[in-house]
Amino acid sequence: MKIDVLSIFIGLVVGALLIILANSLTGKNAKKEAQKILDDANNQAKNTVKQAVLDGKTQVYDLKLQAEKEIKEKRSEVVEQENKLQRREDSLNFRDENLTQKERKLDEKLRKADEKTAQLDKMEEELQSRIDGQIALLERVSNMSKEEARSELMEVVESKMADEVAAYIREKEDEAKEKAQESAREIIATAIQRYSQDETLDRTVSVVSLPSEEMKGRIIGREGRNIRAIEQATGVDLIIDDTPEAITVSCFDPIRREIARLSLETLIRDGRIQPGRIEDVVQKTTKEMNQNIQKYGEDACFKLQIGKMDKELVKLIGRMRYRYSYGQNGLEHSIEVASFAGMMAAELGLNQNLAKRAGLLHDIGKAVDFEQEGTHVELGAKLAKKYGERPEVINAIESHHGDVPATNLISNLVAAADTLSAARPGARYEGIENYINRLESLEKIANDFAGVEKAYAIQAGREIRVMVVPEKVDDNKCTIIAREIKDRIENELTYPGQIKVTVIREMRAQETAK
Image 1 (cartoon, rainbow, N blue to C red):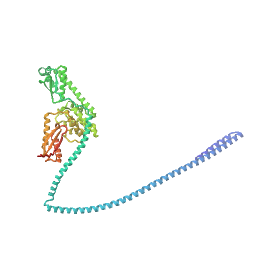
Image 2 (image 1 turned 90 degrees about the horizontal axis):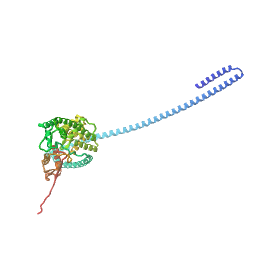
Image 3 (image 1 turned 120 degrees about the vertical axis):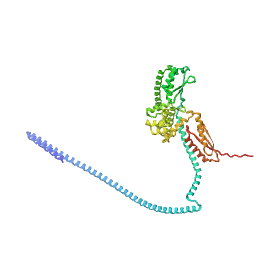
Image 4 (image 1 turned 90 degrees about the vertical axis):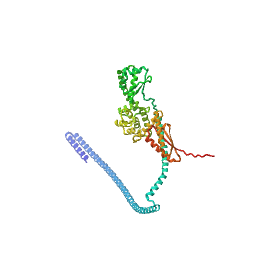
């Protein structure tokens, strides 16, 4: 509609302009030309109006079609929603009917259950009444009370069950031992095969070799001033006796003893032995020793790849390089325990780094046990707590000798690795007196049990074989005796590694033909 009005307005304006133009022209030709122009303008205006009307109708038709299409789509969506709602309503009605039926069935079952419970209660009362009557009758016939009869019955059952219990224990122990030993052997064998560290051949050094006997006099010095200066600077005792070309260094502190040994060797090589020179050499050696201790600790941590550790704790690890236990070097033993524990932890799917860390620190108390009061286990636990180690590491330190119970598998692995490292042939030595006492104690424990005929400690105390009297001890009793001997050994003796207890019952039938 707006297009029509606009077209008419344009036509009128053009016509007015043309009329004005025609009036201004002079002559007949000008009027004709103006008339022609006016006619053309009118025709063009009419055509424009017609085209505008046609376009308007077309647009209206298109809008109508689009509106009808949208109405049809909306109507279809409404129908679809109504269908979905109808289907959901039907489903809900179906579920409601099913629930109603289930409730009715459940109510019926509950009613029947209540009826059966009432019947069972009634039958239980009747049965209890009959039992009480039978018990009273039995008491009159046997002249025994219920408590006396129960006691006698329990004694009979206990005596019969003892053999069955012992047999069951033996069967389960054999089964568990077979599986555990197979798995343990595989894990330990793998750890040993993978570990390639050589056993250290060093032992505690307390003797310094001299190039000649004349050097003893130079070390002693005029009126003993040199030897006093050495002892005062190092804190050790020098023993100069009749041993040719040797001086004995005596000190409970292995660090001071090592400083004294190195200082003496330096002075002997240098040849200048006098109080001033002695003090300088000892100071220099002490400084170098501290650097070496720190380096030994850092090398051990780097070798095992156990992560960040407090510097003071690393230094204590380095001090283990100069600590020996039964001739076994403390640092090498700790590295070996850490390696074994880490390998076994990896086989079992545990935290390998944590196991290695606990193994390396399990004997850390030995780095200070010659300076502080307390066992190396107590001191090690205190040091681990002081430097913020994890509870698993602390428990491994406390429990590797059985002082406290192990609270995690890492602690058990460290204890096993410690035993494995210490029990290997050549790893440690022990005095002949302690060895004999341990064997005697093993045999004494076994001989204390009734029915034991003889006991022999064999394999350097790694096994004890117990011979029992077959007429007094049966096969099941052998299992019980073996377990009780094992418990007493664990509670009463201190020993490296493991001790195998074997109880032997041998039956011999003998006749003489005449």
